Length: 444
Image (spheres, rainbow, N blue to C red):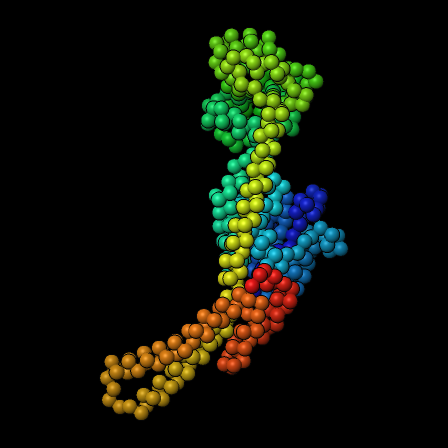
């Protein structure tokens, strides 16, 4: 049984297509059930976020599985397949495993190393599991992937380096004051940058957020979004004298805070320290304000310098992450390849047991008066002979499963021992096809 991944993301499809392809949470259970009923799908998970929609499935027939998933997308969302084809990507077998490992590690995200995707993948898997549409391959696939995502973040610290201006501004505030809960924070401006900053502040634990803007109505709207309070621009000096942190991102063409004004405010504050973070372009705060005692000032260039360093750090962490994924790929593929010979091993063991039982019963017919202990010794000896005889062949078959010739060895075993493995004929044909598609493109 083989994993496949079909979908689209922020790199392959514009937002208007991603919107149409998304699955609303209220639709997910029904969608999962429909998907599981599609031809060739033995297990499945649907991952739907603002930046990607993907189906991960386990199938005995890769071509049938892919066709079913594409038909499912087209029918469920009412989009012609000709249109979908230009946005969809398909990852099969080895590539599907690597793709999910990279997704859950944040290496395939818009912001490299972001942490939100780990929880999103976990939720998607839990939904599929609760709906009863997963199977053994999908379960091991996703459980392994989630462990890989956690290991990448633990070993590389890739998510510890903020790479947006607004997030970095909040991180600088945390570095200066530690926990933000209870700290007075004033946001000057109500545009996009201020909105992003407000969201990061709330996520960081800020509880006392004031918003000031030339348009008081816009200040009210932003304040409501971050559970804060709007203050009028005419009263802002009063709050500058009280708060601990000011983050300024207005659309003013001129300096909003001048040195003389801030010197007067610092007298009212009795020189109590204040952190000013200016993320506006052009700048809101005159650079000489930073020379006033007990004022710490960061401007947009300071933050960009931090972001640039963090981008570099994330890129270095991403290189380490790829190496971790390589290691985990080898372990997963070894497990998965071994699964392909499990039916052959089970059939071989079953045949050995049948021969053992038949011959033991025939032998016992020629003896009379055996004690239970003597009969037990005979059965134990027969069992030991079979186990010892099959041990090395089974160990070798598991090893051969991890080579490009693994399916051939399984077939040889089946033919030599005349094994009955049920539907294995169809499986062996699929295995040949999978190897022809390059499942074992890694070095032997």
